[in-house]
Length: 410
Image 1 (tube, rainbow, N blue to C red):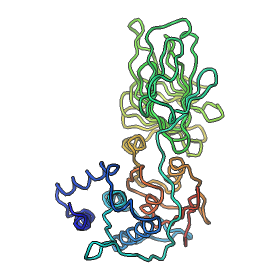
Image 2 (cartoon, rainbow, N blue to C red; image 1 turned 30 degrees about the vertical axis):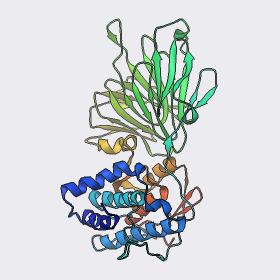
Image 3 (cartoon, helix red, strand yellow; image 1 turned 180 degrees about the vertical axis):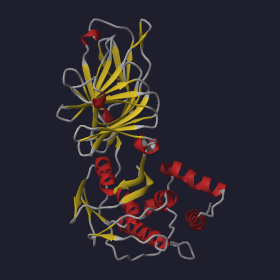
Image 4 (tube, rainbow, N blue to C red; image 1 turned 45 degrees about the vertical axis):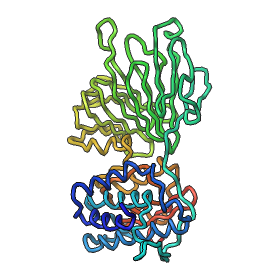
């Protein structure tokens, strides 16, 4: 497709008039952005910033007549834009930035126009997080996995630990006396990092940013037990010994080692979000069953609860467990699939997600932002591009180094 025709296609896509083939073409662009070499790469930082600013202003004009934000104590609360339009806005910014279609910069001859905007161009930006983690061995030695080559990293007893892309894999060939000593490893992701892991029993674990998992190199014959901080998604494998199913337990702790709760796994797929800065510890079940238990009492019905698929257990700061039925499972595990997925999400909660993924600090210029946001945004976008989309909610942002300044009148 000639680059001058891309504007018309995206106009139709934004207006909801694109046919199925045109929609598929736009979505294909999303999947292939990394392979494009285009005019965007030739732009300097000032023109790129001006272009994104102009796109943002045009999108705001497009939806200005649909929903009018209302002011609340100095902040503009976020309107409930439809997920469809929010997604298109994010997709437009992401596609155009990658494809370099000069959407709002084309004149009649296809030559880029100089755009002057009221907003000062961004002189810096923050790249999204990547697959990175640190493996801490039983003797305290550490391996920075993002710098390590693929292949066997270490051998512990008769277990080989290998790196395969963005995944750490444990492969035990046979049990030895050294294996039975239950040496422990820990996998830790920094802010701005994610990683996945195949445990010695074949269970799969995905770690979100600023999280950790501690586990034995070889599981005992009577129980499988791991310890996590932050957020992790599990797909637990069936493990048999002498024809008996070996239980799988997850101890949820704070970064300083204080146990918050315990999960007894009666099923397979579930997500745990236990960041200290969040209001509750959320365990979301996708398949099977899990039992959520508060520390210090394994038997009281008031201190434990069994989840069925589609339910979420929330433990608040007072140690109370509540169940949410028919929870949005896609939203709970969106981070694993490369999305910020929000359904009437509180703006401070979304900003904390951004802070962990982009490794930045949130600074409020006045009161804490209020309101909610609905939509989904690819996590591989640069921070400035994400903030442009979020500004459609009415809240203003500014990047200063490794800080996001939030407030009215920026």
